[in-house]
Image (cartoon, rainbow, N blue to C red; front, side):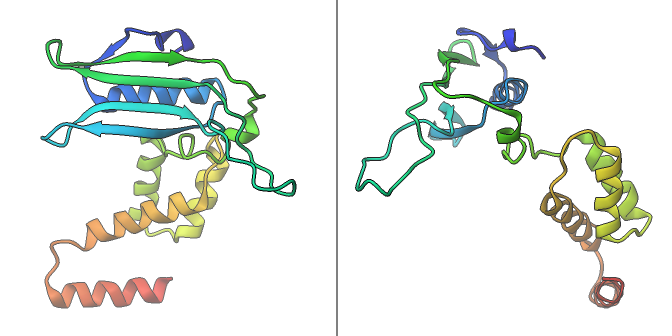
Length: 184
């Protein structure tokens, strides 16, 4: 996906696709965004969402010793749900930053921390082969081209473990839990 896909008037069939497109754009441009505001319909689906730069807004100055990362950055992407078209549409678009953006800033952003399907598949395969979590993290770090965060791997393995333990009877669950504790 290239940066030209984020334009005013672009439409998406689902909120998730709109978010994925915006996140992909911000990763390509090394921007760090936050979801500032959302409005939901009565059925709990999103009606509006506003994505802004992490450095948007300004704090009121209280004293000279207080500093802030906020620069009042105008970057914003707003999406609205159009009932007639049954699509999400980009209605607000300002792609300008009033500060330098750099790759090191996005390294720890939650947008870039999402594990892709290849990473998740590898974690599942290594977990099923009974590798320890720290070894899974080491393998993933050595084969991935992006920065892998240890907590993300540990959370994914924990989720895998919970899924594996579901559906077991009480005795099997107790035995598995004891085995897992011994392995860790």
